[in-house]
Length: 164
Image 1 (cartoon, helix red, strand yellow):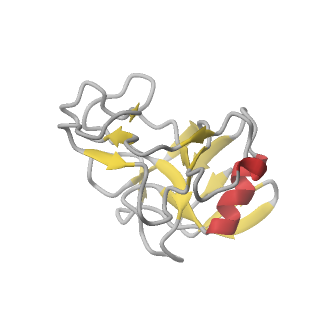
Image 2 (cartoon, one colour):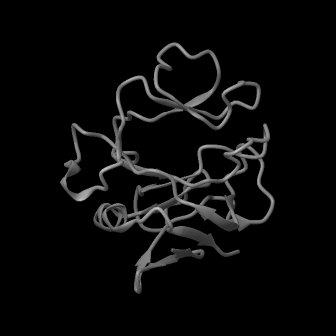
């Protein structure tokens, strides 16, 4: 998959996308709104089972349950990690089970994940957008139909290339 400022390409198909309010850059810090440039892996698809049928998703897709959070606090020992029971989490975090549809289907992008460097940026996802060209906090976002199509056509070898 290839991503630039306004479009993405996957399996020969071009689609509109949104990126971070800080644009695409090689330098990323927590909270700057930048989408990190580079080549990354796409992790397992995550989805809201109360809103999305598993029928169109890969078998390893992970259901998002109430209480699932993603730590975005550089002080948290679990920084840039999914936490399954984060209901009373004392550190800053992203709620994965949301009232809106942004994370109904979400694919974590393997940015700053293996050995997360605190403050370098966290919770970088491919997810459903708010609308065309409405910026994200640093993620890549696409429309609902495109997100379903991408999620259903990923393989374990699919990289995401984000060009500045």
